[in-house]
Image 1 (tube, one colour):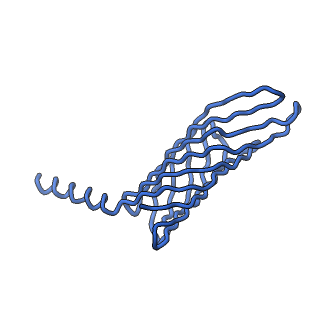
Image 2 (cartoon, one colour):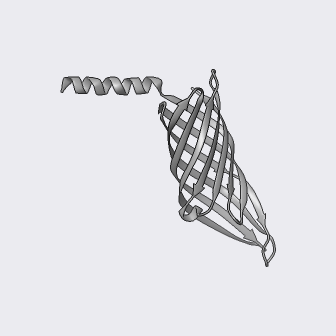
Image 3 (cartoon, helix red, strand yellow):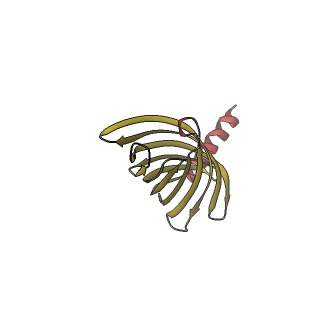
Length: 164
């Protein structure tokens, strides 16, 4: 039993020693059949080992005008907050991964002086790649497909990251 506890402690210590943390800033683009919005994206990534990472991302701002029979409808993204798990392989300075996550968002639409605010949530599935440089900088590119309230939404994210 002592050997098992010692092995578990050493494994956790080794994982913590190699853990990487990143903050990032970039753009997120949300596109479905009707609305296309590009927003500021802020990310926090925690990568405890070479094959797994977790990310929390916040996208905010961005709008789109949609033509309708009653005139233009302005759609604005107040926020989209997501939590994602990334599982993949590291090849050189690239981390290639599949991703699953969950997102909560608020979207406002206004036309002819009326405004509607809509909260929603949905699951995310996608793929991506994170490139690291020899110093502390990196780039992350990701594609996700939304489900539930995000049905048929394509989400692209590009982020410049700083590791510490």
